[in-house]
Length: 493
Ligand code: PFF
Image 1 (cartoon, rainbow, N blue to C red):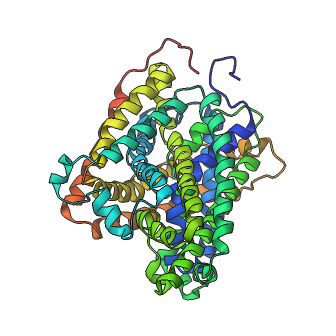
Image 2: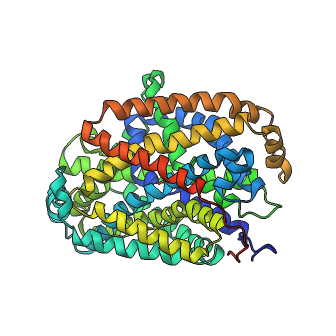
Image 3: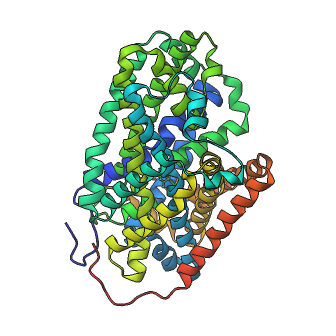
């Protein structure tokens, strides 16, 4: 259904909620969350995590919802309407997810390769050597750039084609329809994987390790920062996705209820996955005869090294559970990637009045070309650098600006009224105080910590690469702000 003004609009609340959940549930839920919980106090982490949801994530989620809903336009336009020069902040917020998309697809590319390999356990006995050397020829040396990794390049072509195919269609036929298909499938398959995992011998060791509270951890500031960082990442806050998706909502939407459903679904899925992942790690701990803390690894190590090792030990069931697991990562990843493209494609469509399908085609072509850098021997190293920079800095910088701008330069009491308009549950005035004072202070703390970690943990070559991304993040938003807007109306979908 399109509105009279030819602006895109969700055909149902279900499409919106599924698209939102699709964005929230991503690689972060499957590999990031379990490790973050474990390395930050186990069960005790759940307390800062829960408090961060209530004090930072939910209020901020509602802020992003309401600004999209109220202004019903692209992110740069929203900021421009607050104060003209702020348009550049909106473009910055849209560029960060586009840059993230460029390497996020690479991890999904590795996943596709593993999806195929899992059918025959084609990774062999030494899964670590297979991943880093046999498959990816990983190197930190610049000469690695000339070494193309063909299977990765092939899977990048597949992924960019899927993103292009889904995103170029109009909102409901593309993002809406695919989210409604993929999210239930994802949850169903993940439930099968988790149920099987908790029946494995040793599962209880893993689950105990995950939830056993280490109470002293509560006195460690880093754990609070990790909890806030995790939930910001997990709920897709600060990257313009939520505001873009909510700008497509019809006038009578119940913001409080929809936001609550998305947050609860995401956090439940996160918990479900963590239970599955730790059950599998518990199984690995007893089959390998090593303590559980030696088998817990993060990120790519978890999915592409530890898990294949476990599937090697699992017997015939691995031939089903393995492919199902990699399929889950694939579905979770794809629904997130289409949300990463949406803020920038919507912003360009609206400012320059270019047809959505053409914008998406150009962005996917550029994205594909740039992402081939990651399909080289230096790929794994570059993914790591880009990830740490954009997550520690790019996202948090945008989120701090967003909090300050809507806390101080805009009438947030008016926003509160709009949030409360269509639902039975209402937010109180405390929301305004959280947005204005508490959240900016907390976020500036998290940002400062992120920058500190970035400088502390990196060498010069890494910092230079990150500086280049930083400069691009200034140049592109500035250019897009300065380019004149096209006035004539075009039928946009
Ligand atoms: N929420 C995604 C995940 O957990 O993997 C990551 C993400 C996607 C963050 C989209 C922000 C965003 F706008």
